[in-house]
Length: 139
Image 1 (cartoon, rainbow, N blue to C red):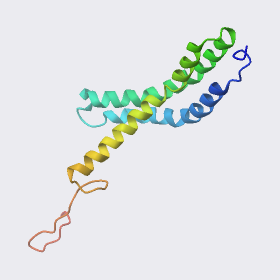
Image 2: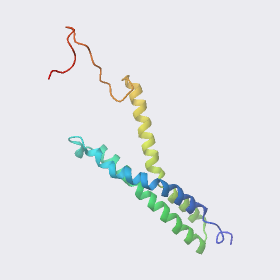
Image 3: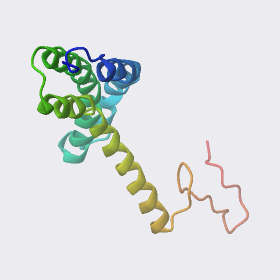
Image 4: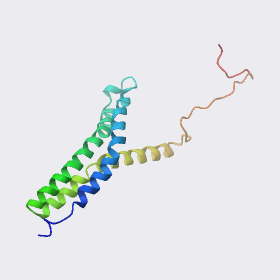
């Protein structure tokens, strides 16, 4: 009986969190086409995987919000322990792309640190010419 009178805490929390992150997720999904800007990147499986992960986030936000409310309504009609676990898993689906991006960023940072390259936007080093002439390009 307590299951039928339970408040929709999980659906409300999922709606607030994933609803707030849905707009930035949609913006990121719109910019995911930039994974294919470089020549030959259309054939790169990593570009497709990364773009798919970024595009999946807003989709998973919508699924988590709608699904948590559907399971809550279903749980009110026929309470079961299985539906509680399903609701938690369903509400946490958008965490999958977030965890993937966090792991990918950490691997990139550790890889850059281990490579010995200087940190910064790029590793271009300007060397002065030996003859003492200006290193600026000629017009």
